[in-house]
Image (cartoon, rainbow, N blue to C red):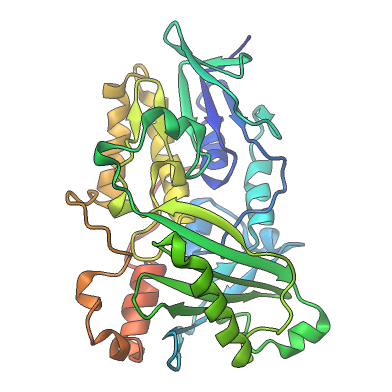
Length: 374
């Protein structure tokens, strides 16, 4: 049996950030993931300057040999009506490929890693956790996404009325013919809201790669909405007629609607395992990074790994992202006041789509980068 101070289950941005942040703590940390890296990850794939600053990533160094698409504009609209394009002037975000970004973050972890290793069992034994009858630690951290096996130990929270958002996307490298036929521009992601405002779709060109997807709160209607959106984009010339491969799916929880506990004795959840995706956009990379850094601060100083000691992390999450909704409002990410007959007009407004949709909901420009050291 190999003993560690803590075991991180999941080597994506949350897990790798936590492992990196604890490398000078003197703690022995093991990071486990069911997949080998680099690996495909279903995600539209953009990060804000705040994420790159928090992670202390050298932009020129990262861009060397990797997809790194500066974003200066957004096209935003409601399906079935013309889009509004806003020019932000400066770079407000960057397009990345998750297979490259996640692999880069994990490559910065110098501690032990166990990849291509599914977690088949997590058993409580003498106050510790034993994983796969092989590795033992007093603390396990769930960083494996919505279906993380560590999160399952805590259940779905009071009432289990969580709204799970389901999304499907495809990302592929375009042929010269596809690239010439695609009117979507690299520095201008396109966001298209469903008319019932229960989700949105996107078209995102990153260099020679194209990412198309749609996410909604009602999974049973997802495929139909996606098919209609793709047909509309093809007819408008925004995307090529011939799309290769199948759309891949994933699921996540929106922060304000999640009821999943964050800590228990010897257990702590970060990133999508904890249900931290921004309520207004579903974006999860920045919350994942920041939750890992907040967790690292608590783990370094915790006298033990009891639920009461780890609750400091839960308080820190609430302080950073706000308190979760106390009621059982199951709406999608937009506030109720948007879901009015005025919605169509608002989505044609340059001020609203820029100041509210882009800068507030998607970029969170009013929130400064987290002051934490990796």
